Amino acid sequence: MYFAALLARTEDGWEASDTELDDVETLSDFTDLAREATVDDDTVLLLIEQEDGWFGVVRVDGEEDPRIYVSDAAAASRSSYGEILLTDELLGREPGDPDVPDLDSLDLDGTEDGEGEDSDNDDEVPGTPGEAVPHGPVGDREVLSDLGVGEKELLALHAGDALNTIAEALGAAEVLETVR
Image (cartoon, rainbow, N blue to C red; front, top):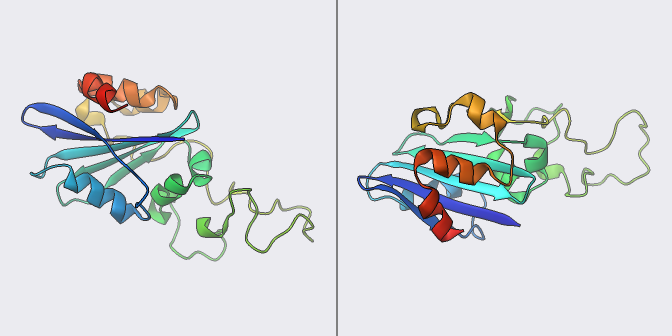
């Protein structure tokens, strides 16, 4: 189960809105969703979490490229919305690298398309995203530093309470609670 909310910074403080992710298929969709939440080019945060598995922050400042942080790339890679956030750039790999399995080729059961349980290569675990997707955090660890959540604090957060802790640090806990 997912929870996603948009926090838009305005002259009057933070405004929150829950967001439906059914039509989101790309990072551009996430970015467009964030930009639609503000009339100016103010900072907008898309906060997303999947139960107690992982959380992500997408920050959009005006027309700049989005800044992304994901708390656990391996957990997010098994999630349809997490896969969207895990771009090649975020994972530090070249687009189309033939030595790295494409996230789109991984099934949610952890096997690559076309591979069954009877693999000829016993040394390799089919579909294991270990090389392609690291365990642990990826992305911009300074994504919230200027807003009061530094790298150390961000890395210490755990899925499940992270979004509330972030909102509290931003002074937006009450507005986030209204959409939760």
